[in-house]
Image 1 (tube, rainbow, N blue to C red):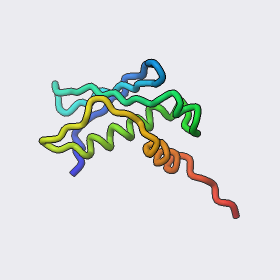
Image 2: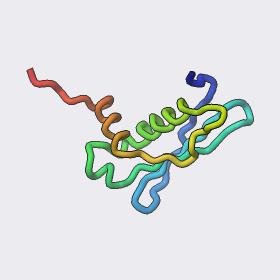
Image 3: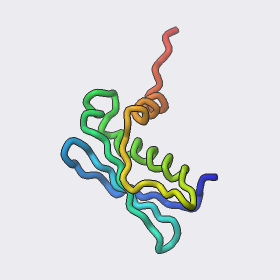
Length: 101
């Protein structure tokens, strides 16, 4: 069952080596927070229709996916990466192909 009581704050990004790393703070309850990073390779922005402006959104989507899978015994990894499958799902959802009539 997904947790509805958490707050996720986007804290910006840094350019590191061959990627952009998006930073998030997850507040589980007052006084209890965790840091997360989501890396997107620079090639992903050059080789796919993914735009730099999509970086925070696709990273947030990936983080939410991991948080949704959390259990008491298995917590989300603090450092996540965007994979090709994540990009394809994101593009299909946000930039659907136009159907020809």
